[in-house]
Structure formats: C-alpha cells, structure tokens
Length: 139
Image 1 (cartoon, rainbow, N blue to C red):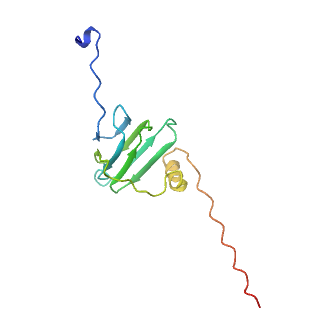
Image 2 (image 1 turned 90 degrees about the vertical axis):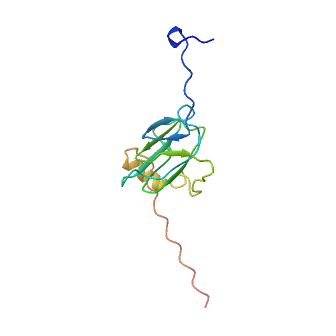
Image 3 (image 1 turned 60 degrees about the vertical axis):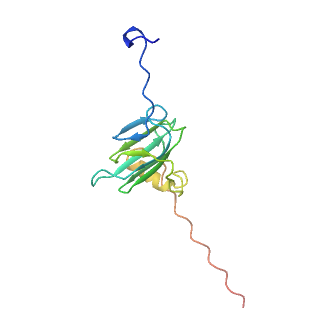
C-alpha cells in the first residue's frame, strides 16, 4: 500500500491529454497523446500558429500560421507541439491532414515562415530555368 506523498511516494502523474485548451508548449507522450488534432482556427480576428518539433528544437518538423481551421498529425516521434492564438485542439483521428507537399518538399513556404519568425530556415529556391525553344520545323 502506498503511503501519503510526504512519506516518500509521489502521486502518479496525470495521463497525457487528448485536448489542448490553451497556448503553450506540450511534450508529446507525457502532456499530450500523439495523433491527429483539429482546431477551429484562430481566436477572434488573430492568427493560429502551431509547430511540431523533434530532436532538433531549432528546426520545425512542420508548422503553420493561418486564419483557417487547422488539422495536424502529431507523430509519436515528435518531442513537442507548440500552439499560439488557436482555438482548442481536439484529438480526432478520423480527420485527415491535407495530403499536400510536406514542409521538406515545400521548402519555399517553410523557409519564408522560418525567416519571418527568426528561425533562419531554408532560403528560397532559385527560379526554374525557362524552357528551351522548340526546334524550327524542317524546310
């Protein structure tokens, strides 16, 4: 039988949550459960910003700043999830994140966002070269 905490037994930690109801940084696995989360978007007329971080806390795995509803997949390998200015997040594994390009594939938007928030990030890629002119028709 466990004795009161004053006698050497600490209370059991609270289980990880499936809702995020305020701004902050949450540890994945201990504060929140991994999975797909949805938010109705920003509070009031502001913007909703979120980011997922892995082992390298200086380089986001994924992030967004939007005035629209958001869906994010928080992976079990993520270390933290930060949210700022968003309405409450609810775990909803039935929701499916946009299958668009990953942040790594879309280096331009992520690089721009990182530079705006002081993260350095990737520089914008150079413009694509112009297509070669078509060969002249035979005479």
